[in-house]
Image (cartoon, rainbow, N blue to C red; front, side):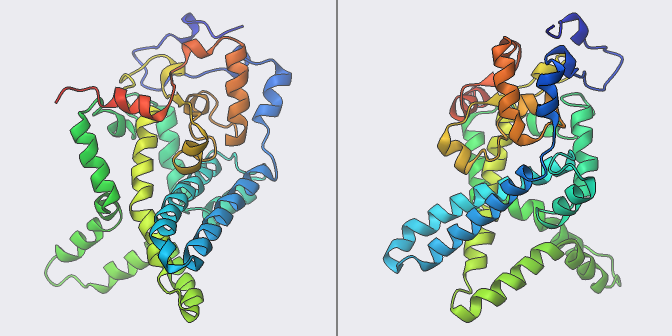
Length: 327
């Protein structure tokens, strides 16, 4: 019943990544509940993410002054991890896996997560279509690995000091304004920038308007912007490394297009929320909701498939592999 090596053989004339047929691994009664979208589980996970963010903000803001050197950094780590969680659930919405009703799925994905669902979906599905092939738009993220430990330290330092965030979110806009042609009006650029960042600016205005009268004007910059600009870029990088670093370019085997990484409780809390570590299973069955990926993992393990899949025992062990290049 297992997917044979012969049926997974890569056709070198085609750049589209090889696919997995669920029937090769699962009986109908196994596959049906795993592929089913729940009308409440995805929404419950999203509510969990926002509740955790809110509670972390309140706990840090209301903690005694002498305790803030501990509570604020801890809140930044927790909030940054849930910001990634919100993005992961938007990713589920991009796969139409957040809710069985597509209109509800897309509305929630657009308005209650990080937004930009349609553009992200168009981009991300190309990643799945061409996973680890030359046309994969995300190949640039995994291509440089392995790298040296010094190189990784530099990258992480740029993440934690906000340099990565600035480069990705703001430097292009500033460059466009500074380098505009003589006589080119400034207002259309500013207007487009405001529109493109309307969710970010609305969140800022609303949060500051609510917290400032209570004396907590600093909550948004310290407990939302700082995690977004520091911890989130770093754990996003670590997640990308775990998922695709050191995977062969033009990899033929669909069981080795992405990596599943074992994650303990702490890792799930701060760097790998909402089952994102089951990334090989996600690439094998990309429309399975994230909350069903652990079930897929257990069934594949029971059927003896795990040895054929790309896996890692943990994030630290994967970082050792990704930084194996000699200095």
